[in-house]
Amino acid sequence: MEKCVEIYNQSKWLGDSLQNTYVDQYSSASVNAYNQKIAQHSQMINWFNQNCAGKQSRSACEAAMELNRKNGIPTQNCY
Image 1 (tube, rainbow, N blue to C red):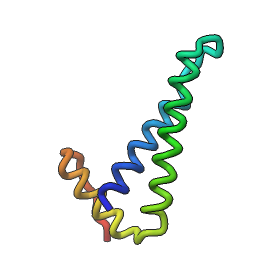
Image 2: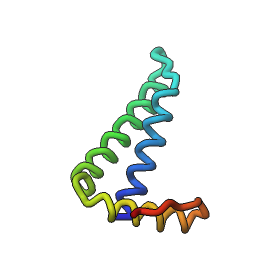
Image 3: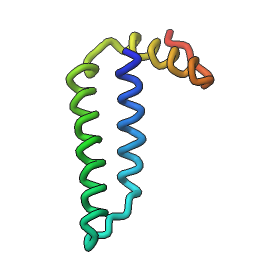
């Protein structure tokens, strides 16, 4: 379940980044870099939906708490 939390967070950060990305439509390098990020985001979302969506929320909460604890982030109670 920790992997689900990690993928969710990474895909959210990437999605947020994509929302603020400027793409120079006249630059093939800029367009290609953006398209690569879109493909990566899509792959992460698909993986999450296949492997994590619909799992019990308490397990997800506990995995998030453990991941936050490891990263020194304050945790909340799952109950």
